[in-house]
Structure formats: structure tokens, C-alpha cells
Length: 475
Ligand code: UDP
Image 1: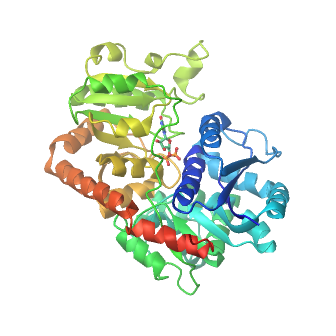
Image 2 (image 1 turned 120 degrees about the vertical axis):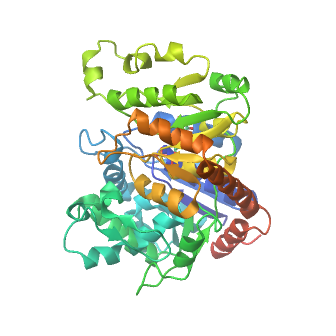
């Protein structure tokens, strides 16, 4: 019987694409296996990943996709990025019967060597364990983050209050910078919530799994990688092997061969002169914040390429407009586009981020600190300004600034608001100051380190070979 690796990603583009790219990486180094990807049907963003899945299906026959049937989720469960973790945990839990059926169907044709799951698919650990299938977690964020998650049950046991009631408390764990309680992910702030319990369960199951696969590389997060490998992050528990196999970053956009207009605009800009602003798959701002960004950019005098979305439906300005899809200008200061047309370019909603980051005209990147975006910037050697919005991004900001030293921070209010004055100041600092230059040097070193890690005998390639060996598939 043929050996199969089954991947079970969470259906958010940052998670799903990363998991499929892991599958591609395994195949390109260990070609005798087939990869099956099981995808739960989500009530959101199928369109965002549809083209990507179609392109992979068309070009790589050893990857097969299985789509699980839709399940009944609570009505209106997804309104913003904040709802995402609860929704996907529920989605995977409700999918357990469908998953079991699919795993049984696959195992009737092939031997399943390994089942690799996203941490949001934690509920499936129960199913695969009952079927005696070796289960690995693929962590689509970094080693510092994983350390915090693995250590978290200990923090949970040591406290009686929720983190939301302990705002100023500093949390310290081995191998990572300390984090203020209020900067922990929203899902971990309230111990009474379903999602909180899911995360604690995830951490506990992770330590019982066959292995943890992390999308990072040793040089980028040295201390955290060590603390995970030697078990310091799970005091009193046994730790499975941890494989740092990253950076797993797809080589190119699945753009159907079309060149986005913004890339032609970049062609006409001087080398390393453009500030790129992009806030992930779910980043949106209220009109007040959009205006402030625009003013800050205008005052800074830098060239910019800004991926900008309309504000959320409950925004005041949105409520007053009659058009169903108002132009982005309705939310920006009057005359902004005209005044900045010689040095600024707006892209509505979505841009080919990887191609942009790798364009020679890009000099700096304002990022929401999603892990894929961070790795893409590292691989392109672009220094960052860290502006976290949701999920684990406030922690990522601390790791980027204090530990990896590849970004400067934005200065946000308690509510997360960034003024035009502050933005202008921080952009200038990144662009002009010695601090900014040091960040550029450091990110360049990490770019070289990333390439070295992925080369033959590099740390990530060695880790991948060990992972393959553990899957029982040396070739
Ligand atoms: N992305 C993109 N264009 C956009 C916004 C996002 O190509 O306009 C891609 C980006 O390159 C990255 C992913 O979407 O690969 C976002 O993942 P990340 O982990 O950074 O953030 P998330 O969306 O999960 O918060």
C-alpha cells in the first residue's frame, strides 16, 4: 500500500496556504509519498483560497484535496477577525464525524503514515488517536509564540483570575521576552470562554502528540527554539520532538500569470524607496484611523504603496454612504489621492504581497505582524514597522522588536489608535535613523540565514529530513 501523509489545515488563508506549502516542501524532498489535504468547509473566505487550491490541484497530482460537507454553525458567528479562533475551533469540533469517515476512506486505500493538523483543528486529535494514527501539529506561527502556548497550562493553573483582570501583570516564560497580560491574544484573556479552554486543551494535546512542526528557523528565534527543544517550556510534561522546518513561504503568487498594475508602478520607482503598508487577510480600520494613516503618510514625504480596505460595516461613515461599494476615497482626507499621486499608490483590498516585498523598489514594510507576512518580509530582507491588530500579533510585535530586532514598533494608544503625528515620526525613524539602519542590517542577515537554513545541510532541511524519518519515509 502507498504511504500517505494527511494534512488537516484550518480554513483561513494564512493557515491553509502555509499547510499546503508544507505538503509541497515534503513532496519536493521526499517524492515517494502522496499528500491528502482535508479541508473543512467554512462559512467565510472560500473564494480567497479557491484559486490557490485549483492551481495546486492542476499542477501537483500527488496532492489530493478532500472537502468536508458544510456543518451547521451558530448564525452570525463571524463578524470580525476577533471571532475567528472561536469559529474555527467550533468548525473543527463539529467536523469530527466527517473527518473520521474521510480518514477511514483514505486508510482503506493507503497506509496513513502521519496526520498533520493545524492547532485550531485540535478536536481532531481525539479522532486520529482513536484510530491509532500518528498525529503531528503544524504550528503556522513562530517558536516564541509556540513556547507561550505550550507553557500556558502552567500559567492557567497558577492563576485564579482571568488575564483581562490582570492587565499590568508581566508574564515570563523560558526563552522568550516577557509579555504584558493585556498583550496576550484575545482568546486567552477570559478563562470562562470556550476558546480559552480549547487553547489550554490544544497545548496539553500538543505535548502528547508525535511531534511539533514549526514554520520558523533556528537562527531567527534561537532562544525560543532551544527552550522548546530542551523541554523548558513544558516543565513537568514530556515534550515530543520539535521540527523547525521554515521559512515555509510560497515561491510565487497564484495570480494566473497576470501582472498586477501596482508592480508596473513599482518598476517606475527608485530602488528601495517605497514604504509598503499591508495588514493581512483580515485587517480593517475605521475611517478615523484611515484618515490618520493618510495624513501621516502625506506628512512623512515618503513614497508609499498602501493596500487599503473599506472600514467595517458598523463604521459611522459607511452608515452615511448610499453606494454599496463606495470608493476608498470616500474614507480618506479630501484631495489625498490627487496630492500624493506622484509618490503614492493605493490598492484596494488585496495585492500580491510576496511579489511586492520582493520588488527592488520596496524599502520598508508596515505590517500587522501576521506570521506569514513576517516570514515573507524576512525572506525578502525588508525592515518592518510593527502595527499589530488581532490574534497573537501584539506578542509578535514584542518578539520582532525586542528579540529578533527586525522591526521598530508603532506607538499605539491603549485602544490601538495610531495618530498621524506618531506614524510620521515612526516612519521617519525607520527610514532615516541609525536605529532603522540597524534593523535593515539585521533583517538582511536573517534573509541570508533563512536561505542558508533551507539549503542542503541547512538547519531546516536537516529538521525536515528528521521529520520525514519520523514519518517512516526515508528516501
Ligand atoms: N496577503 C496578500 N495580499 C494582501 C493581504 C495578505 O498576498 O493584500 C497574504 C500575505 O502575503 C500572507 C497572507 O496573506 O501570505 C497573510 O498571512 P498572515 O499570517 O501574515 O496574516 P493573517 O491574514 O493570517 O492575519
